[in-house]
Image 1 (cartoon, rainbow, N blue to C red):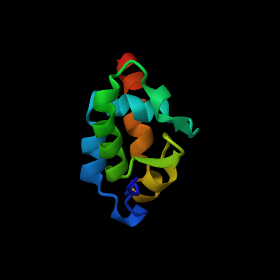
Image 2 (image 1 turned 30 degrees about the horizontal axis):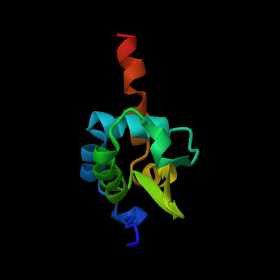
Image 3 (image 1 turned 180 degrees about the horizontal axis):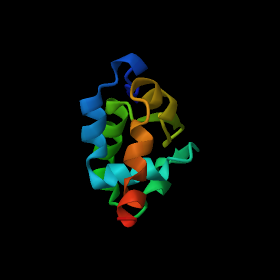
Length: 105
């Protein structure tokens, strides 16, 4: 299996992060990972077809939003909260909190 590419923290670009989180499924994934707990890829959004998830995982990983690691045949993911906070302070909390603010308008 090929190694998974994760950008270094310094190489994470705002435009890539925003593009990745601009898709509803990927935003849902980020929200599901907001607790910081590592999760098995198959359990994060079980109602989304597996055939489309490979693209979403790659987009999130290559933009620097998530980190994936292999354990046998399984992939586990975590949100790169500390890296994103170091690059763009407050951005992740703002993006993940948006529905709560919209509900109070």
